[in-house]
Image (cartoon, rainbow, N blue to C red; front, top):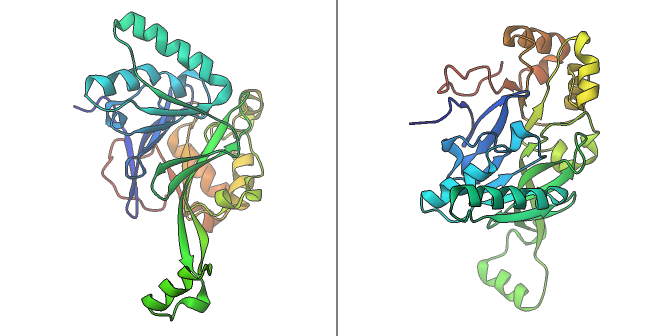
Length: 290
């Protein structure tokens, strides 16, 4: 039986599942890519995913680390891999050691410290790239991208044999191609992410927009979260096909959030937006514009 009633968003051949309410819990997974952005309280629907990409150490994003790792062992799975900001690694190691003592069994883990600019291979041709965010010390976001090699135009009409011969001669017949699939910002104030092409051109952007009314501007600034004013400026500078909004505050009803988004976003941007939690009571609905 599922431990959480997770929201589900289907975009082409990718399913995004998760739960994200500001201050309560945030966990967002893309099973087909074998990644889980943040871990929340470790719902059992994400335990089989091999890679947790942790953005920062706040409890609502990281509380489930020990349970995720321990339950994988209980289920006979290989140790989970957790990517986390390098400055958090000593504390995560301590956490795992304490839980191992409490549990009476060693909790195995593959911990990887990351910093902006790092890349980590998830699968053959599939990588995650790390970039800085503006939330806590060392906080980061992640882009999952596919790397391919594409044949140069001047060689596309050659036969297989001719291509093999050119390779034997040491001729470079292809060039690297990067396809950014999904970007997860995590909690952050607005940063000019348009300067990073892999974010600006990512097919799917998963971004927080926590606050929506003027009375909450100071709350947004104090907690280094995104207010609707910053969010509008952010998405207008990017070119993502799909935008999934996470981390909305419960201080503003979802119906009101929809109205504010529609009033503030250009129509062509608004039709690309999905509120992750909007259809949690009807999780099988396929993706469509809000």
